[in-house]
Length: 477
Image 1 (tube, rainbow, N blue to C red):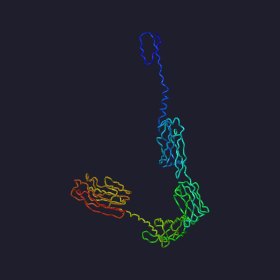
Image 2: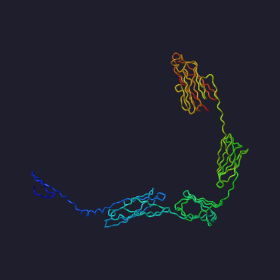
Image 3: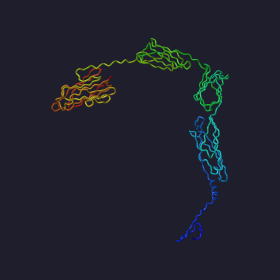
Image 4: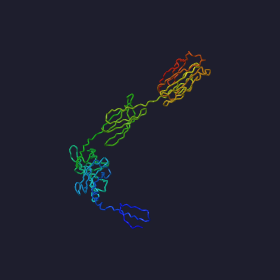
């Protein structure tokens, strides 16, 4: 075995083919620890930025919008145009419609984070007419969001109730104070003064003052921050209003003649006396009388058999005012349709019948007011509440089998509860069979229309040449 030899890193080792055994030991090279000491000051020179969001709301969690918010803190740097520099940072922003704002890119440093972790950031808001908030202190390097809670400002409100004309105080006056739907009542002292403690500075309230039955006043939508905390509320003297007697006349709306015996249910809505209900019956001249104060609202419901109920509202008084009542129209029962013995088929409320006098094939087609065609290929139709039916279709095979045809044929269409309007009637002549020898012959026919008003017969003729004839009929209920 060869002697132990030490070869330094970077040396070249050559192995020979003999029995010697070589042991190689590799020593690691240590990184100089003192380099960290050199890098540490460089890390402390790193600058950074961070964001802090702020939300502003009151104690009921309602957002405070368009509120100026101020943020203040001290940022420290190992180097910033000089060693160990401290910089005062102050930012002001306005909250959005959700009461939020974000202070972006607030300067800081690794040096400040390590050596000034306890540095505070203060968030404050200026006092407004409506709200005030206490300053909030947090640790700058550990806080990301700050809630700023606002309190409503309160004011002691003094109200003096006086006579509108003389300005004299009203010691026995009463005040109704309504804010946010809450109602409070206060009594004035001997000087006509009422104190309302802790009124919200930006509340909108309603005041109503009264003094016995002699004075009243109403003021709405007053904003406390916009008035003096010593507010004068004048009450106007009440002028006594006496009721007056008013004449009304029930008349027929068509003949304009007075109606006797009409029962009139009367409701008077009086601001002082409340609602009053009366009953008055018209006399032989159709007259009845109501006593009410001017300014009251009067509602009259007039009732009598054979007349429709009439609802009448009076806002301004005029004696002799007429109440026109509409008579109820009595419906005359429909005249039953007369049975026509010479016509085949069903009668209905409206009937259109076609008859001719040979073996030819004529077709009856009717278009109703809805535009439906009733004929041999569509024997049942509906229009509104009516129903039309073709119940007789004569000589339909006369063109091919004339020996089976009738010499007294008819076609019949009838309607139950027919729709009023225009009915278009068509008479069609089908081709003749050669054996009939009718090529140049005209076929005489009778068109019959029957309704509650009676019967109408229309006579005419048709041939294969002029194979289509139209006519119309207006049906009235």
